Length: 524
Image (cartoon, rainbow, N blue to C red; front, side):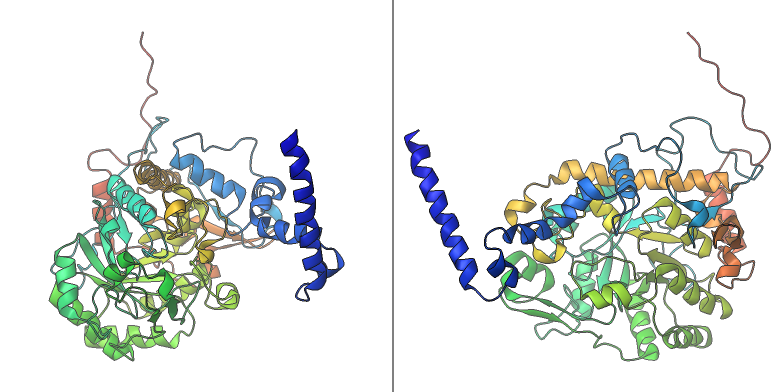
């Protein structure tokens, strides 16, 4: 009781002092008018995302990922029941642009009936990466679903470790992001090494690209391909600044920069200045490393893509893969105007680029990769129908390892330890446990893609044509996907040879078409 009698005056004095400060200060009119009480407004604003996530939001509100979408990822990652009951609560009939996937009553593929069918499905790429241009280290990616570029520095070391171990368990690729190849990327998962404008991890003492350092790096790590990052959907044509306070010894060693000093990433590459010099550099990297080389870009002005495709057709030089990042893609930090309004969303951007390559008769020679909320089965199926061969997942993979969509990536205060360099917060993320959840999510997405492909009568999602998807345009109408984006009937699919080979890989012995096998009878 004595403690309580002393505490009450102390609390009252503190509140009085705070009220006096609010009354005197001039920065916030709300606090001058409503001292102390007005601070509740700022508190509610700070925890607004969490309140909306857990209390206010409906199943299909909340962005960028709805409650239903997050629930599906979380349940898949934990191997819990990810089914939904009582039918859809999406307003299908009145939602403009809603995609409908058309199943077939009879098709080549006969879906297996077992409840566990597809859980460990092998789902390799329908195309061999680098084969069209004879790269020495061409390969067929073992998974059509891979982990998108997210750098160590943007994500914590524990998060990168969890994703890399998860990639190893699921048999997929992890993109390093432009922040370099850290020790956390060396936990068994195979890699796509991303070359950004600052050439982190393969730069000399003056910040210029070093071919020798790149060759040493890829020789000592499981790097399967190189990706030149031109831009990304959430912040196209922007450079970056990592403040010196955040440049720890680990980050400095990974990126090849001085510790404790501001690190500036330019908005443009120094090794090339146009399509012609870009292709020269691509061929140099491929020749010196033997690896397939591609580019990653958001889509804005189509002149770049027209020139690139024309040069590839006329000169024989070319990229092995093209990663298209939609404007709806994520990032750790960017100005609002860029995340909201610069660069085309995935479907529009990808379809325009694909059409350009197809018109130049190059679409069967290039592996197309998509990014931008494609870690959800419905979005991914539309991407495959449009011509994607692979899809990259970023934020969905973050959700799988614990992200709660707090949207604090830019503050270094991520409460789940995913997008932060705060050691206390990062320690809360157990890489061993979360790696299993990442792998579970990746496997589940592949399973669902396979099930939908079989429902459409084909063996592989890469064989789903544009005729299998229609886009609703209101209460009474819909338009086939190929008409929406101006595709020719044969576009969106691999070459006939690649189709035949992926069918052979998916169903080496099982007969195609006809009736399903008889139902099994329980014994005992």
